[in-house]
Length: 614
View 1 (spheres, rainbow, N blue to C red):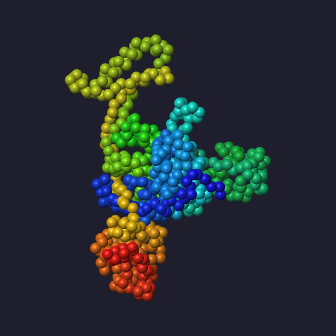
View 2 (cartoon, rainbow, N blue to C red):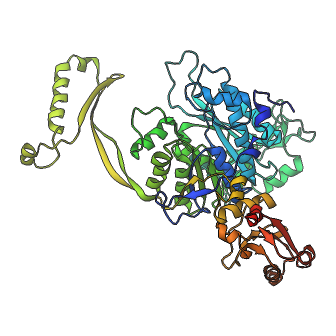
View 3 (tube, helix red, strand yellow):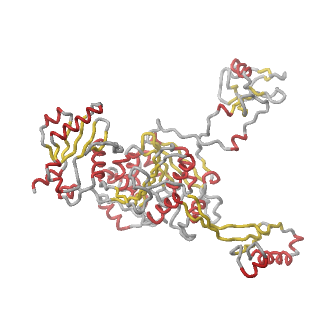
């Protein structure tokens, strides 16, 4: 398979392995609900570090990844910040931001994306999929990178999304009206798209002109261009017409005996006069209960960029002149969820931006009562005031602020009417005078002077005179419900600081990381009646951790794996009757390897045993 070559590739190829593990720290004041790391998450921090932090709990569990990375147009001013051990790449850190004058901007973009895609693949479940939006600047390179990271066979589709509702007449060459949505699967053999709901337009194509008891149907062609050796026979129509064979250059798609059987079952339509070329009746009740997704998405179905910006404006999260945020419409991500996520799916967005993915997940749950969960990661300083704030408002509700227009006059201006321009101008002025006050008692208007509209707009468009009243309105939009935890990234787990006792992580943080490194899996939820020191169950073993984030404890005999502890672990396992061994992390042990083997216990020493030297 061809591979993509770019500057820095040899340094980032395994860079994900050197990224330090940083535990997630919950800020309960900024979330909604108890702050459960197993629920919805909004994470503020570098997304490469955040993805590494998610591995212990979510490796192999994420069902759908939706990301909207920098398009690398040269105008975004994104920064390359990865701390890769390479002189050339350390130099890149001093040349930020990446702009159109940067001759290495494509190399930098690829170096930024590579380790993130590798970690995203690790987080995906075997039936999971990744969806990435891009434009023509990087889509071809992204395809090659994804072929290498996921495998060429993982590619599902390149969806074309019509992002603009009208052409850009200012374009020098072509008006770019679409973006790409690349879709790849962790395992193409296991991934299957969910069928979309059939539209009313599709349902309308079915009729029942012969009152068939099986319900509405539509005719299907009984001939095709593909050669079929038994598809050239003549047909005697019920109305008396004789067809010498199929239409020229075509073949019947069924043999003659099959046609007779279908006709006997009332599945052949001969037309009103029963002399037409036969067609097969395809019943609505027998087709798939949905439609297969297509690779062309129109803005009329999934929204456009102005819809996305309008939503943020209505939520009071964006100003009209703000061009730094380029959100995607909620309806676009809702469509991806319809196709690629079940009702209990975990959805991850590591380039969260304005939080559209969370909004789409909340809307989907409110619509069908699902229990989907979202994980958002945003590294910019607006993670709290924009990303998380949007989630808060979507959950709790918000005051919708928007522009309301009311048509006051609409008239086609003919040449005759044009000659009466003075009369029309007087009509417009009369409307302005009349509608400048609130509706109600005329006597009250004189004193209240309350305007119905903030302004009256008049325009002549394509020969039509239009007068509209315009005003800003505000109303409460009901919340969608739900909760989430707001997290930041803690200090990296540093072996030297662990040895010195300078940095001792919480039990959950260290336990999750040890479980993942030892088993390659994600830490399952702790059972309600779990014994002391129990981490979780892996495929071949139960995992334990004897630890407290206290130097006094770690230096005491209580931190050691003793005979009584080993007996307790083994007895607990026998009660479960699963026959699994026990992997125990502890600073020290006070029993022999023979005693451990007899009890089915494996000891994994922590570096805290060195504390005993002091």
